[in-house]
Image 1 (cartoon, rainbow, N blue to C red):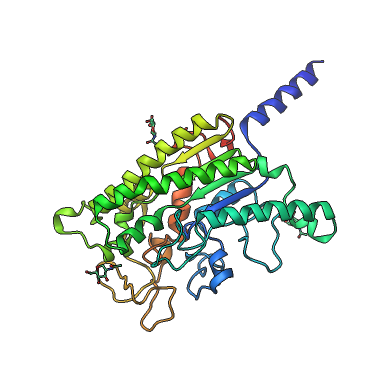
Image 2 (cartoon, helix red, strand yellow):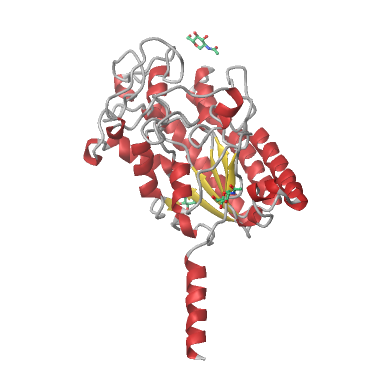
Length: 362
Ligand SMILES: *[C@@H]1O[C@H](CO)[C@@H](O)[C@H](O)[C@H]1NC(C)=O
Ligand SMILES: *[C@@H]1O[C@H](CO)[C@@H](O)[C@H](O)[C@H]1NC(C)=O
Ligand SMILES: *[C@@H]1O[C@H](CO)[C@@H](O)[C@H](O)[C@H]1NC(C)=O
């Protein structure tokens, strides 16, 4: 009896220590787009993807994104984009993220119509079609997730940055943007409830970055000397990002009340990225406010009329992206994403402070 009791205890201990998520289902923007935008609107040019994949793979980075490191840690394959129709294997998850997409439906200045509500409609389509294909059997069945995966998967969400960035492009004031933020979060909350309604239970939610430290917004809304912090980031823009994050946190707190059988991990990406950017040298990085790939040089090496992903003259990439934080002025390098992932995966920046592999536990 003793060995059996012991092995039962070991079994219970192992069940309690890891969630064994069989799949990841992701919603978001370019921070987690693994090829959705490229599949719909055209491939990215080099030097995207070069450091890690050897060629562009639809990711806005020289290599991996945080979502790729999440997949690696959960021992799952990298996520394929839902819109990638060529030879795609969805058995361990699917990615609806699309670069440039926002929570709220697009406005005139937003070139990407695949906002969060469309990503959710695509999820519904994915769920019903994969169910049908699994029932029919045959070759394609093995490329689909199992039906119970929809309630066992980790649902990851990283979106909102473009809602704020677009508001700045529309010349909204700080006060106007803050007044507009609650409507972004109401919509996000509705979508999460809709995912819950489809069986989703485990949510891993990233807050938004210190947008005032990103070259493209420093270029768009240059801070005056007294609006800059020690690093050169824009205090007013970061204040807006922090306001968004505090409202996001409140939204998640409310979701925990409304959906007590779901688990929500709120991940403070802002603080990790700010730490990296403001103490870059200490962590082996250089030029934290400068794009690696860009043109024009200057403080930010960012030219909004000649961005790394546009086919224009004069673009250059830096010689060592592994020592850089910003790849193209908007997005992070493989090295920075790895650094960020290593800090968030153990739970030190999460609320509650559960690690990634335990994110199913309340
Ligand atoms: C799909 O991916 C899974 C996980 O990587 C793998 O085990 C399976 O063999 C793949 N299916 C096909 C048909 O390639
Ligand atoms: C925002 O302001 C700039 C500078 O005044 C102007 O050139 C631009 O057209 C404005 N954008 C919008 C969307 O109104
Ligand atoms: C989120 O809000 C709750 C309730 O106000 C608070 O206790 C918690 O510390 C906040 N978490 C973060 C990460 O700000």
